[in-house]
Image (cartoon, rainbow, N blue to C red; front, side, top):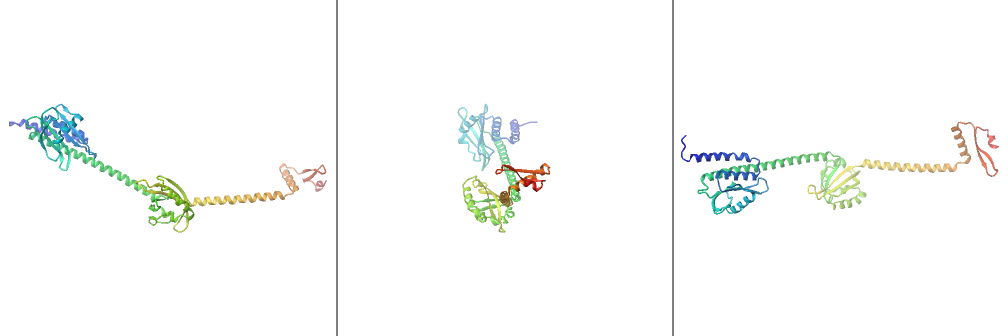
Length: 380
């Protein structure tokens, strides 16, 4: 095939363009600094420039930038890249338009012709790319074409990376929101099915939340108590000590108080309640005193009944003891001895028994009790 003059350069340009088109696939999932280094290296090898410099925005939300540079000797280290950026800074104006300027060479002496092309679109600038050379005619229209193609590829890669970051953040937010929603549903289900009355109260004791179990415990619907203080329903005898204790609790962040007192049911009866107060007024997510209350009326009544039975039994025992004392004091000696003879005869299985008692006045033994003998024996 007969190729016209310059067709070799055309094929070279086409080959380089095809090579550049493969870069975005290599950048998928890569961080900004990897993309920047790849762009700088691709420009340097394609344009045979004296130096290339790339500054790109980080794909995360930090707002940081990354720098990369290449020279005739290859990739520059971070310090060298920063130095090239410092020298070129006055000409790095990412205003959405490409520019060509003659600037002092960042490496060596003299000046270089530098092409500066911003990355991104007006209003969404993602960075800037610069390539410089002392070669005559640099940058040619083909050089600018390569730079623009690579800039577009980098912009697409960065915007894609930013989009993935946003999508990941959105997915994470949705995941967290879903977890929070499920957690709230479980929490609400636990509260609604709990037999305990769970409330949130402000510093002055007024309700900001009342669980549905309140209607089972006190006969009130939650809406009937919102904005009110339960101290109104506390037994007067209990309110005298409960009110100052609650006032002291709200001054102790994180403090816990357990109290047992009487509350008036909607039907007018009194219910014994045991309540656990937890001061979470300083917790941003709560900002309230959390109170768990449950009915202990049956327990209190059982305790009171037991105490009453103990008192009654004690009185019975005291009465028996007093009766026993009176009985003991009223018995005659003969009655006691006769009972002793009868019991011992039954235990020993004998038919006849005698009990003698010494008479101190007559100095002789006298029969004081007997069993199985004629009465005349006792008179001897």
